[in-house]
Length: 397
Ligand SMILES: Cc1ncc(COP(=O)(O)O)c(C=O)c1O
Image (cartoon, rainbow, N blue to C red; front, side):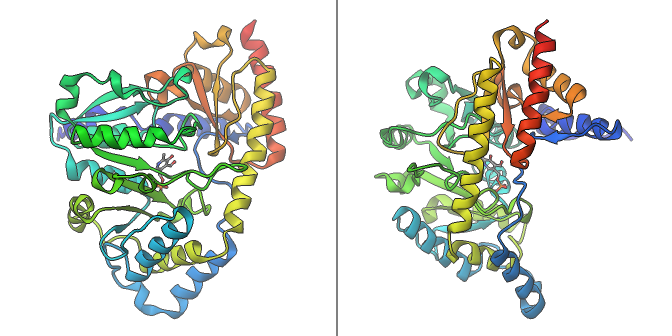
């Protein structure tokens, strides 16, 4: 047989982490002591009260073993609405304006299929979380990149999008606090601009708020629904993965007006049954429970970010500390940069066992950078820095 996968699938290179994972496997086989700072995969376990709720539900509530309600059980949607109100002061109707997801990645990919046709254009930041560009490509659409540059505080410049692109643009992805740059929106007027721009050009604005809770000090990330007119144009994705250390549980939600949500709900009704009911109930425990574990998670990342960023800056990297996320976005020293981030990250992993993600994997404008996830024990960062220091010194020679 000579069967080829779909053209849309063939358009995509292997997933960013496939290559890094292969190299990691080789490193493990060579008995290298791997320090894995590649994926944004939280290293601490899910808070105990959430785990307890899951175990209790699975054990004692046999009904939860049956098919779930695809759009999310009422209790889950109500908890989301209460949380959105308490956390952001926004009004989300639990009946019509919330959809549960099997993680926000699933929702983002399916949203693209629900809205995009071949020939449509998706406005995607560069660099970006890979699903923001892979999702539209899988749906047969084209990408128009909006560069995120340090000189613009890693915000896109909407005025640079050509008119002929705007005519075909149907969806725009924004993600702040941002993966991979760790940037935040300092001036909230940006959100008003984005809303007005999308309204004017008839574009669905997708706010990916996966890191809304991973913020430091006094900084609090907003919901897009805090800004006027957002319900007319925007959907917002939320994830349990980072806020509650629940990456493996696969649970998230999207909220927004009934009208904008409905195509995704309809599409998903043909594909999945939603997250398991016991998982949704554990999600309720997470959302309505004490929020001190969430603050503790954020504090851990802040502590690690400070340590790694200080260490890397001393080695000639440009690795700023920011006010959010679980990543350090590090620019390689000028003498190394020309080698390209993929080659550099591969070499670092092979020689030292430290796995980090090449910036190019997040888009053309990520070249020259690496994203380092803050997902290992605090003590290991000292070790990682020593290895990176030695490797950098040897590479510069
Ligand atoms: C910006 C962004 N959105 C969405 C996701 C996916 O989250 P989930 O685990 O809810 O699918 C991630 C995961 O790293 C992310 O960085």
